[in-house]
Length: 168
Image 1: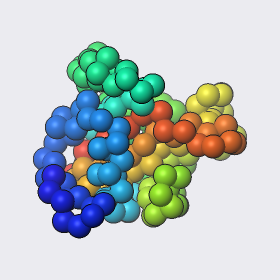
Image 2 (image 1 turned 180 degrees about the vertical axis):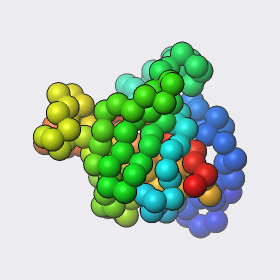
Image 3 (image 1 turned 90 degrees about the vertical axis):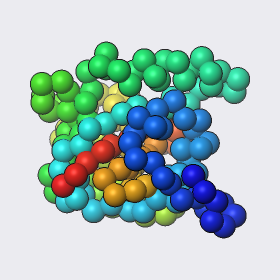
């Protein structure tokens, strides 16, 4: 990354694998410099868990777990998006945990972002899935990152960072 002005960064990331295990604050800065996506530009994308937000001082221990999750041990492979609805993809192409897709303001900085919501009663999700909200911004063509936010109606809390690579 290269600083271009205070608080802004230019991402030279070529692959999500380069971001696996990154510090959550670094991912937050990269996300803040990203741009809103059009959901029709995604289709099916390959996903990666990039970071888990842990207690202060636990970053190095948690980073090892995140790197393990980035291997083929995790059954989650990414997301598929069709207009205003999407699904999480598991190994074998199985679609699970549908979500509503919308452009909205980010819970982090109020800027435009793509939001994946799991709280629609028609989706039938139980708690805690209903309390999750994923956000996604483009950081370079074909790559997006965003926070996983847990919100029970109080102060939303970032619990993880994830990324998606796509080529539609």
